[in-house]
Amino acid sequence: MDGLTSRRIIAFGEDGQARISPLPGEYALLGGRALAGKLAESLGDGDALIFVPGLLANARMLPAGRCCVACRHGTSGFSYSSAGGLAARALASQGIAALVLQCAPDRCGNMVLSVHGGNAEMLPSLHDGRSVSSALSALRSAFPHSSAIATSGPAGRMGLAIGGLVFGSDGSSAVSRAGGGSGAVLCGMGIQSVIMTEGRAASSPLAEEKEKEMLRILLRPPLPSSSRCTACTPHCAVQPKQGAARSAGKWPGYAENWAAGDEAQDILNQRRYVSFCDEFGADAFALAQILADARAEGLLDGYDAARLLDVLEPLLEGEGDPFVMKILERDLPPGKRSGAGRWKHFLDSLGLCSAAAAALDHDGDQRDAFASAAVAALGLDDRSLDTLYGNMG
Image (cartoon, rainbow, N blue to C red; front, side, top):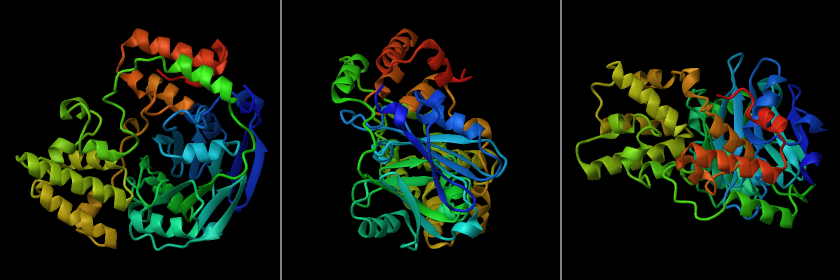
C-alpha cells in the first residue's frame, strides 16, 4: 500500500495556526468516514470541521471521489456528510489524509483558508458572499489554479442548521454539497471558504498498475445503472433517474412542499427550489425535511409551493418572512443527520462515488461480494475491516 502510509494531517487550532503531523500508523488504512470518526473522538469540545478524502479519492480512473465532511457545533455530536467533485482528489493528491479545523472566531476573522502543496494559510476574504455563485466566481478569479473550492452561502452566515458547504470545481457552478450544518460551523469559525490547489504531490496513494488491478476487481462489468447515483448534484432531485417513486425516500418533503397539482408547475417549483438551495448554500435534503415537518405541524398551511418559494428567495439578499425564518432556524434530530448505515459507511470510507453506487441497488449477497473485493484490493485484513466499520449496524 505505497503512499497510504505517508499521509499527513493538517490541523488548525484555536490560535489559527496550521500544524502538520504524520497520520498515526494505526490509521494508515483508514480514510473517509472511518478516519473522520476516529479523529473526531480525539477532539475536545467546541466547533469542529473535518475534511477527509476516501482511500481511493486519488484514483484517476474513477469519475469522482467522495470527501467526507464531519462537523460539530459546540458540544453536540458530529454530523457526517459527503461531497463529490474534486475536493477529495485535491487533498489526497497532496498526501493530505485530513484537514481539521478548530478555529476560534476572534482569532480568524472573516477569512479564506488556502491549502496548497501540503501548506495551509489564512487569507483575507475576497467576496461578499451574497450568493454562492457570486462567491465562487470571485474566488475562481482570485485563485485561477484552484482545483476545488468549498464555500458557505447566506444560510451559513446566518448560522442556520441547514447551512451547508457548496463545492465548485469547474467554472463557477455548484457541483456538490455537504450538509450537516457544515457551512454554519465554518462561518462560526470566521472562515467563509476553503480553497484547495493541487501542489506537487507528496505521494501517490496507489501505483498505476495497482490501481488498474484494484479497479478491475472492484468494478467488474456489468454494473447496472443505479437509481441512487446522484452524480453528486442535487439537480438529480429535479429529474430522478428512475422516477419519483424510487426517489421519494431520498428527498423527503419534496412531494409535500412543491406539489401544485400540475406536472409542469411541479417541475418549475422544484427547479426554483434547487436553484435557491444552490445560491443560499443550504442543505437541500435537510431544508426539505424541515419544511415537511413544519407542514405536518400545520405551520405552513397558508403557503402553497409558489408562495413559499417567493418568501424563501429574498433570503439571498438577507431579507425574508420572519415567520419562515423562525422555521428555518430549527435543527434536525440527530437521527436524521448522520446517515450511519453500515454500507454507506463503507463506501464513504473508501471514497467511492458514482462508479460504485450501483452496488447500492444489489441484494445482500452482491453487496458482500463487492465489499470483499474492495477489502482484498485494498489489502485490508479482518481486523482492519472491523476498524473501518467501527460500531456501525
